[in-house]
Image (cartoon, rainbow, N blue to C red):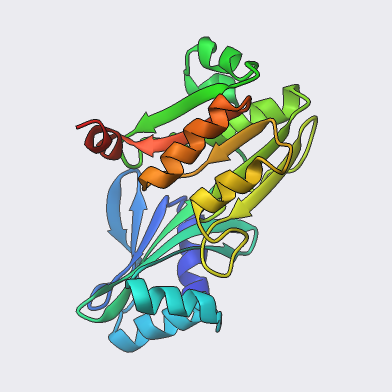
Amino acid sequence: MNLEKILDEAMRLDASDVHLISDNKPMLRIARDLVPIEGSEVLTPDDMNEIYDQLVKGNTDKDEVFNSTRKLDMSYIHRDIRLRVNVSLSDEVPICTMRLIKNELPPYESLGVPDIVRRMTYQPQGLILVTGKTNSGKSTTLNSLIDYINENQNKKILTLENPVEYKHHSKKSLIVQKEVGKGRDSLRFSDGVKNSLREDCDILVIGEIRDKETMEAAIEMAESGHLVIRYITYKILCRNNR
């Protein structure tokens, strides 16, 4: 199975996601519809294992995470496009969901976000939450906000992500992006948040928060004189408030 051809077709058709599942043809999500790739063959368990090997590329840390947790979040680069990849299991066979990440972020002004959010980024400390359900545009909104700060403010911005999606380059601000996970830049989100206190950052951006320890560390960071921006899914926010 040629993964490169599948991804080329996804790029050509401007798909948002690629779904690779055994006993099905490769499927693309295009304008919210799931569409099989024309002329493609049904994926077999051997195909899926081959795709897994191609994605992991012999990285023992990633392989260990997958074997111990039965899932893996990672980034993958195809040509000049980054993809956010989730690998899990179905009937002991790997399945893959791949999100294509566009290289160019939409201008922050085009998102329809209230202007007060932009003005909040000039505060010297505090906590900004970007919330919403899955696939509602939290990541795009967050990264467009980072890009706006990068272009207009002289700050040190530190991001903690799993995986890193948009690659930012320092402009008026200084940006450091860290990937969280075994064998990556920071073992856990909570570790990265605590260490950021020693890194003299002005703004800390935290990817999805899934545990109490990380949430408490983020609040402590905000209270200690830093601006913390994080996104959290609506269902997790509701569960933590029960």
